Amino acid sequence: MRKERRWTIIREYLGLKYVEAAVSFVIIFVIFIPLLKLKGKKEKKDSWRKGNSRIKLLLYGAYGNQSVGDDAILQSILENIDNRLFDVTVSSYKPYLTRKMTHHDIIWQGRTLDGLFYMYNTLRKTDILVFGGGGVLETHNNSLVTTIGMMYKFSKVYLAKLMGVKVYCFAIGSNTKPYSKMVKLLVETLLDNVDGISTRDHKSFEFLTNIRENLNMKSLADPALLLTIKNIITENSAYPKIGINVMPYYKLLNGDKSKLEFIRGEIAKSIDYAIERFNAEVYFVPMVEGDDTKEQNSIFEYIKNKNRINLLSPDYTPNELMELLSKFDLFIGTRLHPNILAYNVNTPIIGIAYHDKIFSLFDHIQHPQYVQSIQRISSSILNSHVHEILMNKDSIKLKMKERHKHLVSLALESFEDIKRIYMK
Image (cartoon, rainbow, N blue to C red):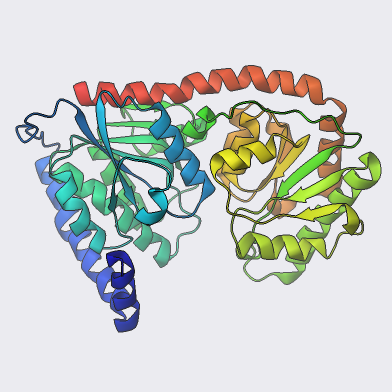
C-alpha cells in the first residue's frame, strides 16, 4: 500500500486530523513565524552539491490533484524550464498520477503536517523552491477549513526559508478581496520572506502590492498560456459547434435553491437560443467527475432542444482538452484553465465567473465584455455575446491571436526570473 494512502487511512480512522491541525497551528504560529521574523533571510551553503553542476529545483504546487488546470501549469513549466541548468524534482499529492506526465524525480508532499517530514529531506539538497503557479494565495471564503488549508500550504515555504532555500512564487493568483486576519498574517509572512514573485494577472499584483509595498514582484501571465498542440484542425461545418463547461453552482449559493434554479434556467435558455438561432450543436465538457457532471445533467433537464446536446465525460490531459476545444467555434467556460486552453487554440471564449480570477483572465486577454458573474447571470446578455462572437468570429480570432503573442512573452519571463533569483 502506498505510504500516502496508508497515512490517510490512519488519520481518518483515528480522527487525527484535528490533532494534526492543532499541532500544525503551534508549529507555524509559535515556531516558524517567530523564527522567520527573528532570523530573516538565511543564505544556504551549497557545499553538498559536489559533482553536480545543475541547480536543484523543487516544484511545489497543487500537482497530482487530478485537476487539468494544475496539470497544464506543471506541463508548461516542465516544457519550458531549462533542464540543462536545473535538476527538477516535482512534489505531488499523488505521485503515481504525476509519474504519467514526467520522467523527473517526484516526491510525495502530503496534504497536511506529514508533508513537512517528507519535504525536509528534499529541501536539504534543494537550491531553489518554486511555489506555484496557480491560485496558491486564493481563498474562496474565510472559514476555518480555508485557514487550515493555507496554513498547511505555506508551512513548506516557511520551512524552506528557515533552511536557507531560495523561494520564487511563480505566476501566482491571489485574492482581490480582504483576507481574514489569520490568513493575512500567513500571507504577510510569506511575502516578507520569499525572494521573488510573479503574478498571473494584474489584479493579483495590485492586491498583493496593497498588502506589502516594495516587493520584488512582477505582473506576468499564467504559464498554461504557453501550451500548444500541433496541427490544429479547423473543421468546416454547416453549423457551429459550441462547448460549455459548468461547475457545481450550488456550492456558491449558501443553499438558495431558487437562485440555483434561476441560474440553470438562464444557462439553458442561452443554449436553446444558440441551437434555434444558429442550429448549433452543443457539447458539455466537464472537468471533474461528480461535481461538473451532476451540474451539467441538471442543466440538461432545463434544455428544450435535447437532441442537439452532447454530454461528454471528464479525464482529459491538457493536450487532449486543447485538441477538443480547437474543434469548437465558441467555448463558454466557468472554470479558469479550460478557458485558457481554449484561448491557446484560438477558440473564442465567453466566461461565466464564479471567482474574481475569471474576471482577471478576461481583463488580461482584453475581452472584459465577454464575462459575467454567475450570481448575476442573464440569458439575454449571454445570448448577445453568443450572437456577436458567432457573427464576427474571424475578426475576433485575429485580435485574440495578436494578444496571445504578448501574453506568451509575459509568461516566458517568469522562467528568466527563476534564473535571476538564484543567481542574485
